[in-house]
Amino acid sequence: MAQGLLPGTALRIEVSARDGDESYATRIEDVDDERVAILVPMRGLKPRPLPVGTLVRAAYIFRNKRWRFVTEVAGHSEDGACEYLRLPAFIDCHERRRNYRLQVAIKPSRIYRIAVPAEEETETEVEIDGTIVDLSESGCCIASKAFAMPGERLGLEAHLPEAGDIAVRARIVFVREPERGYRMRRIHCEFLDMPRGQRDLIARYLMRRQLEMRRRGQL
Image (cartoon, rainbow, N blue to C red; front, side):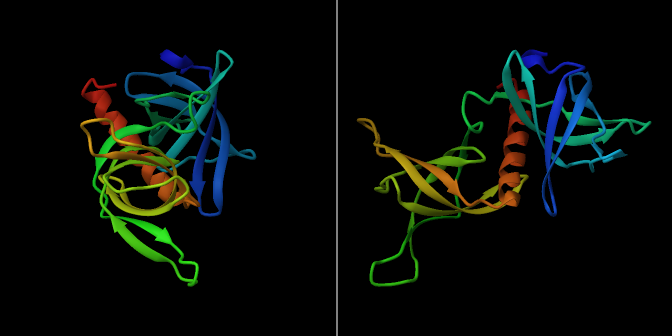
């Protein structure tokens, strides 16, 4: 397979747990057209099988570069020695960017500016209209006619199909003004203090979209 996802490759996986993230070292045993078989993770000297459906962030080294992908546990071998991960639709080189971004067209239920007037201590919210046109675990791009400036804070609430609802806050990093003949600005945002559960929802949504796109031949 491309990007060195081959039997014998050492794999570092990370999963969310009640008390925080858990990280394990394992090894790829087999790869086919639908799944990746890995050795069941160990905690100390005890096997630590992961429930089916668990979201997994995986990373490995190939040709002196760090590659990573997001997938989920799809099952276990009959003898209990291996776990099966869904074959990722996309594998990202860590050197390219911090998080994989996917083009989307999501209409949030709410987008609003967050401001604290100088004479007051409470926040005020001013709603604006816009559409999320790309999304990653760390941020998004919003297409909107609204005027915006780097450094402003936004609140965003949206439903991600087959994943769930997110409610996050973001800082505007930069704004691309519309080209001639267009009216929409591109407002690039970085998520702030995002809970791990919200980040997992975005990761699961992106993973399922990638799998759908692969089935359609778009990846």
